[in-house]
Image (cartoon, rainbow, N blue to C red; front, side):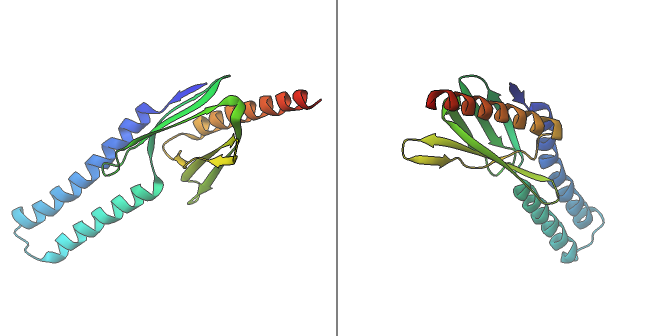
Length: 162
């Protein structure tokens, strides 16, 4: 299964850029065009910008490329926030995949994926991947593919122990 949320990521990235631009333009118009020199409007614009960036940082929107196949699970993700730009990648061999957890918070808006891999020294937990930019259908497809890999692993381990 392969999943790519590029179309939705482009729209979210556009909002990331458009909203601050609109707030700054409105603040500049109030200050320059209408000749209102009251700093309360500038402080209000600054607070709105801070709140916008804070909310977007909390939601953790990511551009995600997800692949789950018989040999491996690959999750490549990049933050859509203009301030956080490094790309990350997780690759797990399907036979080493141990478990996953999807944590949903903020009234179902913020979704985080945690992947676990069995290693020689124990269970390894990968950093969380934000699934907030995905639709419910896409999140359910990820759940189904990971559940299928877990079922195959349990069946294979059951056959090996007999």
